Structures are given as C-alpha cells and as structure tokens.
Image 1 (tube, rainbow, N blue to C red):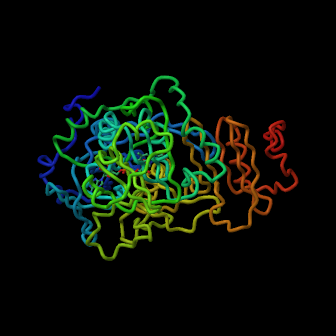
Image 2 (spheres, helix red, strand yellow; image 1 turned 180 degrees about the vertical axis):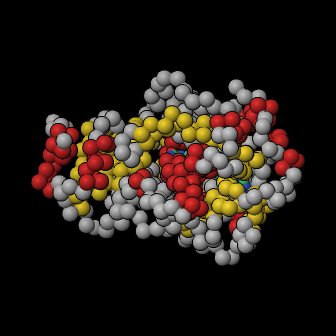
Image 3 (cartoon, helix red, strand yellow; image 1 turned 30 degrees about the vertical axis):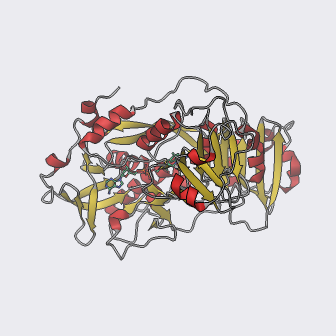
Length: 512
Ligand code: FAD
C-alpha cells in the first residue's frame, strides 16, 4: 500500500515547478491525469522517446489502464488503477508529471500557466480535463455527486448511518448504485418510462426489474486490482487539495455499500419524474405537503415523516424524506480552462468540438475523453458516449495525431471508431452493447429480433434493410464476436430470419 511519500515522490510540485520553463523549447503537453490524459501521455512517450512530454494533472493520483484485453476486433476490457503519478515517470523515462492546476491557456503564444505560476510553452497540447458532475442542487452537503474516489468515500460514510436514500438519474452510475446499495431503502427517481434507459431499452429494463428487490449474489473471486485507500489519497491531497479523475471500471467492486437497515434490496422507482425542489426539514414543514411513504417500506413506519434530514419534492407531486440524495445525472465537459477563449468551438453539450484528428478549432490544441465532443462525420455504427473505453481510445488516437501532424505524416482514423462497442455489468449480468444497439438514428426503418431466456439471458438485435446494425447482449451469450463481425461485414441476413437467434443453431458455423 502506498504511503503519502511514495504517492507523491518524484512528481514536480508547485514550489519546484516555480522554476518556470518558458525558456525551454516548446514540448508536448497533456493536461489531465484521467484515463484519456494518461493514455495520451503513454502513447506519446512510446511514439517519440526522444521528446520530453509533460503531463500536468490537478489530481495527486493518476489513472492507469492495466490488464488490457482485446476481446474481439473492437471490444476491449481492462482494469483501471489509481497510481501515484511518480509510477508513470518510472515507466516512461521521457515523461515529467507535474501536480498542478492549469489556470490559463494563451493560444496565441502557445503557453500555459498553472495555479502555482508555472509557465510552459507547448508545441502541441492535448486537453483531457474530463467532466464535472451535473448536480440537481449545488452546495448542499446532503446532495452528493459521485465522480471520484473521494466522493465515493463520502457516499459510503453517509450510507452507513442511512435508512433511506433518493437516487436521481437513469444512467450507468445510478443503475450500479441501486444494485449495490444494501440495507437501505432506495427511492430511484428517473425521468423516463423504464430503468437504465441510457444503456438499455424498455425490454431489457423489464428483464432487470426483478433484481431491484432480489437479494444480491455475493461477489465472486477476489478483487483483482489494487486500490489506493482514501487515507493514501487524503495524504496526497494534503499537498494540494484538488479534484480527482472519474472512477474506472469495477469502481464499486468490493466497496461496502450498506445502510443501517436490515435486508438486501429495497428499491422503489418513481418513473417519469424529476426533482423539483430539495427542502430542509423546516422548508418541508412550511410547504404543508405530506411526505409520501415507500410502498412496503420497513422504515417509513419507524420514522415520523417530519424527521428526515432532507426532503425531495418531485414533478409528479410526491415528496420523499431521506437521509441524503445522490445526484447521478451525468457530467458536463470540464472546459473551465477556456472560459476566456471566446474563439473556442463548443458543441451543444458544451464539449470541445474535435475533428477526425482530435483537433479543436484552436491551432495546436487537441482534446480527448469526457471533455471533448466528436464532431466528425461518424461511421454508420459508431457514436460517442462518455465512457472509459472511449476515453482510452481517444487519448491514444490523439497522441498519434499530434505526432503525425507534427511530422506531416498522414494517418487514417483508428479502427475503434468504426463500431460502438461497450462491455459493462448491470445487476450482476455481463452487458455487451454493439453498434446502434438502441436503434439510435434509425428512425422507424428497423426490425428487432429478440431472445429472452427467463433469468439467464436477453439478446436483442437491430436489423435495418436485412443488415445487422446493433445488438444488446445480456448474460453469458458468447455471441459478441460473431455479432461484431456481422455488423462490420454488413452481410444481408434477411434469409436467416429468426434462425439468427435460435439457441439450437450454432450461429458461428453459419458464417465461418
Ligand atoms: P477524468 O477521469 O475526469 O480526468 C480528468 C483529469 O483532469 C483529472 O485528473 C483532473 O484532476 C484533471 N484536471 C481537470 N482540470 C484540470 C486543470 N485545470 N489542470 C490540471 N488538471 C486538470 N464509464 C464506463 O465506460 N462505464 C461505466 O460503467 C462507468 N461508470 C462510471 C461510474 C462513475 C461513478 C463515474 C464517475 C464515471 C463512470 N464512467 C463509466 C465514466 C468514465 O469514468 C469516464 O468517461 C472516463 O473516466 C473519463 O476519463 P477522462 O480522462 O476523460 O476524464
């Protein structure tokens, strides 16, 4: 386990960094120690071992991708470790890591300034500053966002004394949380008609629904990756209190998410509703509303309605008291650095627009990961989602583009941008999403093939003009590689009809 010293050893800190480098020749600079920034730095280090590469990160620990496994052509899985920044310098001899916050970018003179006064000139700069959680209510200690190791620790601490939490949002974080929380009533507030709608459709949501109230399967096998404990992180933060990068895969594995009550799962979903107001107990009292009870609650009867520390009033008219609220409503790209750059092109979602070379509209400035918005004409089966797989792919590709642009080489876009592919785990099931898995952008011109086997698996295929455009595979279906090929090959599958999903037919044999 790392100590505070080893956590920061070898990394340039603000005081040392005061020895400003304006006089050194402009180099390759990456801002951000998340998956995108670290992958970009490592790739740059590999591609140009003779160059000095500087990674500047506000977070004391940086993210490192480990145990990378290319499952198929496009599907990949990996683990993410939080490591002391110094470890990167040991591994990549031409990398210098500076723990500092970049505060200004002077794009006219290709120069960045940091909080501690360091000024560095760049030849090429890649911005990987991630995203900031959208909170339904700012500056309320009883409304938590989940983003980094520290925010998870705060959440865990609050949960140990909690009997009821309200979780707001319908994406991956909310879905994982409601499954992981035990011994605590959960009111899950979603604005859609079905759960987990960012990732799956209403049919798959139905498949998951029974798991909201079922006992959780005990975790299998030991936790493989090393986690730096928050004590280490706090020690590191004492040197500079900053925000960390977004969490990585298996962020919730092995974490104790138990509340005060008995029992495993108790999740009540409030569909098609949003939070209208968050009230203190006295605001609730003066609202003259009555607090709603959770159906089949074991807690509500124990606790008088006026004694919760916080209340949420929903757009459907209901009001719930709870111990605290988790706001898991997505992230906004973190472009704070560019506040004064009126010439920066931002997309509608506030991400930095990047072209097919990961270039922003400002010369020599690239962007990758959650902070950017892919603004090239996407391949038929690809779309951007702010996921760690895409943060890694964009970081690596941005590095290749920076080097190619500097040397005048031409490179073609990485193959990973041909097909959207994501593996995750929801409610204990492996979930693989391929291509336009929810018929995104296909209008009404598509058909669906479905195979559902009780509690075991859920397979959905999207066909358009006889060709496979996307698929959702839940459970151990073993179909991912075949389906990935079918989508990429664009074969006309009309003649196979429903045989395509017949469990008695070895589908791989058809297409060998
Ligand atoms: P980040 O990891 O946010 O890194 C940004 C870095 O920039 C940080 O190191 C920060 O300190 C630094 N920084 C910011 N501003 C400055 C500055 N001015 N100067 C210097 N440094 C700065 N993805 C999935 O694929 N599947 C999931 O199931 C999933 N679940 C998630 C669960 C949680 C709880 C969260 C929070 C995210 C989840 N994600 C998931 C999303 C995924 O983690 C992100 O898409 C990915 O990590 C983004 O990486 P990034 O490098 O772009 O940004």
